[in-house]
Length: 487
Image (cartoon, rainbow, N blue to C red; front, side, top):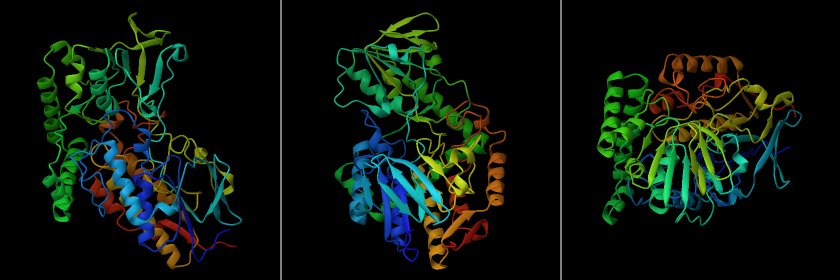
């Protein structure tokens, strides 16, 4: 049992979500904070994705924490820059002494008799905390498709999120499975460096121009100047909100963005047959859009071939398609995304009366504001179910959640209340509101990673960032049971 006068808060994950939450807690006077991070440094998904060309799809003015500026080298930050930024935030805020690196959490159990959480890691260490916050995110575990013959391949194969160190593809025949956001970033590099590149596409992605620019020294200084940074952030935020509205509630806007994407495809791909194969057959926004100026030119290069036939099996020497074509390859790269709807699947979490989180979220995850679930006292989620975005910066959503959770914990501390649990009726009402917003939307009509295996859209937020900000502006304490532990 911990000291209730000075509660201990344990956060799983030191990416944007974990760091922003720690900052908010620190700002409110919490001094017993533990961050457990499985990687060797901060960054979360930016630690895992080491493939060449990895960079953010959102302008850095918005894909950054509101109170922490940085001199970005361009409109969009690459992986190395984002890691430097987060490391600088951690250092400047003095968070380093809270973080324990190399700690993979394996289980978390709530003890009713002592009203605390016991967290176990793969190293055998055990931690006790009054409050537990999961900030592992939705892009923590790569999705590896179970393709027949996967283990037979004699060449090199890996998921893009598990990129081998010092991989040299010079003179090699490389195959890429997938044409989503990760593929759009790594394919141009592979096309420039491999002898041949074969891209296997199941569904064409909607691709919009990115218009990336590198900043001069003067422009970088201006971008870090608070008034300029605030103005740019506001403009980017507004543009993202318009894109979300185009998908959710503005058919005219959707048609305009669709025309923009078609124009980008037409200008980039001269070959009509290739252009047809790269034209999506589902409404814009049904799946994650890709922002890139280099993807289409790479696909049109002489050493690149786009294959739209389905994969039948993986052979010892490559891939066999359902059309019977054998594609001989030396390297296979799986750009197949992440298990975005398998929330906390690698951690054994149990709440009141030993009930597992997997049981609680069967058949589909259900929460209150994506941050709490009934029967799991003092457990909160950052980047939980239904908090991802079609357009816009997820960092904005994470900051809303960090503020909300820190404010809720501050209220509990001020009132000397040790147990916080969302009321089941509030959770059910919120989930009903969500399902009503999804009904008839583009996401229900398209098979996508936003859906879980039961067809429920469980990873996506169906409205604008502004709407989420408003709904999370302050905790509604009547939606929670708040009590003192019996001990």
